[in-house]
Image 1: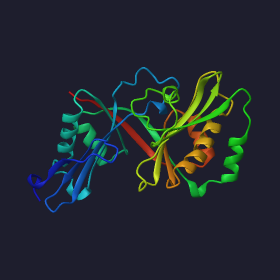
Image 2: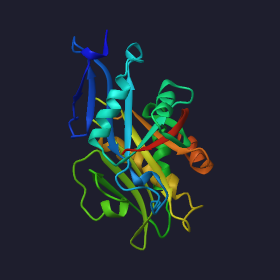
Image 3: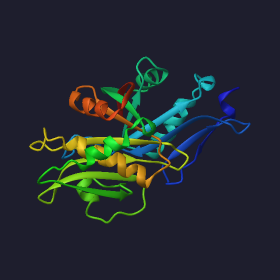
Image 4: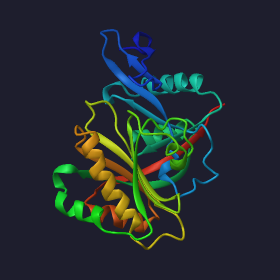
Length: 266
C-alpha cells in the first residue's frame, strides 16, 4: 500500500500528552509517536545543570510490516513541527531498526543504560516490610503523590500537598532537606507497568542504605495507591554499578541494554 493513503493524526492521550498516529485507510494504526517531559528525578541530587530545560522523551514506533515506507520520517516531522527548538531523547535496543532510524535522522549517541524489571508477584512482601521498618536515626521517610509536570526536582514537589496524579515519590529527609529520593510514574489503569526513576542519594549521605530504604518504601506505597500496577521498569547508567546492585538486591531482573540518542530540533 502506498504512503499516500496514510494520514498522520494528532491523538493526545487522556492526560494531554502529545501523541500522533499513522492511520491507514482501513483505520488501523501503522505507527505511533509521543512526547513526554524528561524526569529530572532519575539523576543525582541535585539534578545536573547539563539537563536542558524542556528536554523531551520521544517514543516512536512503526509496525514491522509498515516500515521502509517513510512513516517514521513523517511521524518525526510531526513531532518536529510541534516541538520546535526542543531537545529529544530516544532510547533504542542495540543493532535495531530504531538505532538505524536515529542515525539516519541525525540523532547523536550520548550513552547507554541497563533496563531492569520487577514483578510484584516475585516480591517477598514480609521481607520488603522489614526493609522499610529498619530504623535510620536522624532520617525520616516522607511520601508524596500527584502530577510532577513542570517540577524541577523532588523538593519542589514536596512544597505542595499530595493530590491525585500518576507519580508516587518516597524520600528520606534530614534536617528538613531531601537527602534520598525515588519516583515512580504510572499510566492509565489499563497499563500494568510503572516506570521507576532512581533512587538517588546525596553525596555525604551515601553508604547508609538510604537508597534501599526509600526504594523499598516506594514499592510498598505504589502498590497501596495503584493496585493495578503489576510490574516496575527502571533504567540505570552502565557505569552506576552500585545502583544496579541495589536493583538486583530488590529483585529486579535484567531486560537488556538500551542506547541513548539525542537530537536538538531546528
